[in-house]
Amino acid sequence: MARTTGILGSTGSIGTQTLSVIRELNSHPESPSNPHYSVKVLSCGSNLKLLESQIEEFRPEAVCVYNDEDAARLSEKYGWLSVFRGESGLAACAGQSMDLLVTAISGMRGLVPTLRAINAGTEIALANKETLVAAGDIVMRRAEEKRVRIIPVDSEHSAVFQCLKSAFAGGKASVNKLILTASGGPFRGYSLKELENVTIGQALSHPTWKMGGKITVDCATMMNKGLEVIEAMHLFGMPPEKIDVVVHPQSIIHSMVEFGDGSVIAQLGLPDMKTPIKLALTYPYRGNSCGERLDLTAISGLTFEKPRTDVFRCLSLAYDAAKTGGTLPAVMNGANEEAVAMFLNGRAGFMQIGRAVEEAMEAHMKASNGVAGSSFCQKPDLEDVLSADSWARDYVRRSMICP
Ligand code: MG
Image 1 (cartoon, rainbow, N blue to C red):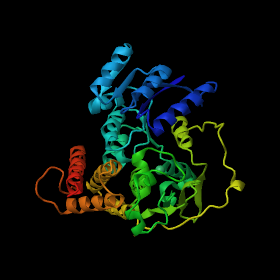
Image 2 (cartoon, rainbow, N blue to C red; image 1 turned 45 degrees about the vertical axis):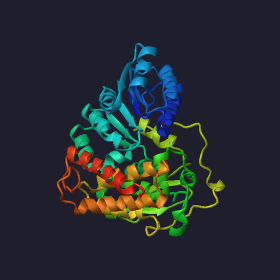
Image 3 (cartoon, rainbow, N blue to C red; image 1 turned 180 degrees about the horizontal axis):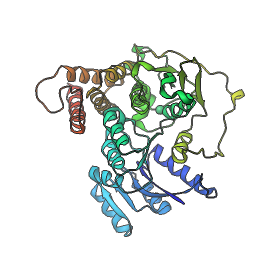
Image 4 (cartoon, rainbow, N blue to C red; image 1 turned 90 degrees about the vertical axis):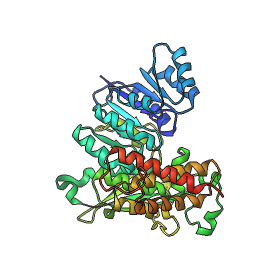
């Protein structure tokens, strides 16, 4: 029995770890709880060399790349392979018939392909939180209509997904709140003044997790945790008031659920993304791991702090966006993606990220000038979300240009 999979963003951090989990799962004997995993679809941005080695190892039926030149090179080299290109190619790839799609690309680019896969009835292993932040209502509604399961790969959400199984017969009614843990990132304990002068290199050195550039900067601003609050809201149908964030620098407890009787159930493990990736692939079974195990006696302590929302404004902005809903989370997300890209290109300072996001959100709530996407919409459709996103990016590009 084979399980067909696809990976959008196969050369990134989650993509390469997914392939190594597949390699490991396929090395065990096949059984009903451990089928053979075949890789049908791969996609990448610019790391063509790594994609080629993945093509040779996993023999997918289709791949998608960003530019014409790369597509032509792959078509010539692998005559048997269907090669797609660009945004529309990515959506077409995602819409191919398969059992499970791992959405491991970063940013809003994941939204349309994820919807296309849901339309095709493909189960989603969600590693692209921006999709739910920008268009959670639309995506979750579509998944429900199509009876498609969305399994979180984000470590916090994978933890909540597991802890919620302890709700017993009471279901969601017995849940009091979700508690998402945050490492606090590289600037935990910094003052506002110290944050003004931090460098790209400092923002990119995360203390506990090794990840791609965009998410690592999001961790440094704590926007990542804000995005995760909105992601949790949609995945688990909880209001933002019932989702707490606690800073836990050791990243051993991946998140918790507090039930009505006061019991708190937590999921623990070493900070290794292969664990939630494997769970998303093998669910409802748990695969085995031959990797390092958690040794509680080797940990000096597990500590918890309140997040400092006065310093890390992005987290409060995300709660505001979550409470207001409509197009505001899409604007926040689009503005953040643009501002982070500008920071990574050296065109903006670290503290400008949060300021740009806040300004875009304020402008969006006030605007009524008729420019597409500029003004707030409470019940957006996909077009409204996409134009709010591009308006926000545009707004940030214009407002962040140095005088
Ligand atoms: Mg996470």
